[in-house]
Length: 338
Picture 1: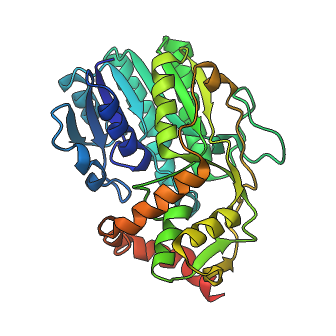
Picture 2: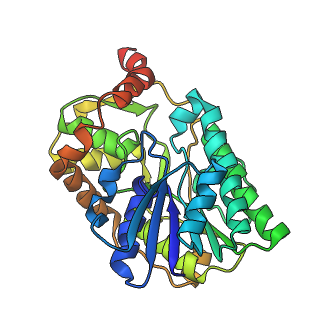
């Protein structure tokens, strides 16, 4: 593993992974391939911009010629695919965009990786492909029962990865990560949205009763898990990557408000999301067998995350305007009025 193509590397988890890998290893080169949609941001990669082992290429994983050029021009031997449309609310508003990137894009990237003899292909997936679980934990062999267009598209892409392993013998692995948080997360997601709203004393539009349970995973722990599976995961293997930090959404937000010293009166219960999954929980046995462990407690990771948004208003204030503001009004405007 010498030349990595990290698709979607200008996004939240992707950019954290790029920084993590370049800091950890001095014998790899990374090419970030990103379409730079609304959630792709070159500011995320500014810390590694001077590094001679980093290169950026703008491109769409669903565009075959661009993918082929990036693979051949950079002698890529390893692909890590973060590229995806990821926000459930947006997938409810426009499912077709998610199918194009998360299914067609994954197929195109797989096919060109096969054609160019890529040695290893890792697909970054999500716990949402399983659907909701009332009790117990999802394991890798459990059926996929996605409930949102986003989750269905991710499941479709993941099954295409499996097909390329079984049919063509490609060396593939899949990680299914749980609810990830940390610095550089686009402020449409729950924590960065509520942190930045709270900083400005704006209402926090909390879906339903706020008792939905998520398994919270700090982004650097997510990155270390992906790195481990990339290096040690068995070909064709699927690995859960959970934080093992189950929390009700409302409790996470109250903890965040406490760190900021903001009142809970900012919480504003609103109409729930359509088809909102109640609980996700993953069993990490296969990942632990590879030697993975957490490096951050949930409480410490939450403090680090809140502190980062407090100190980096330059990053998020310019995002929370324009396209974001139009989306926010479409998604929450009527809910807040009600």
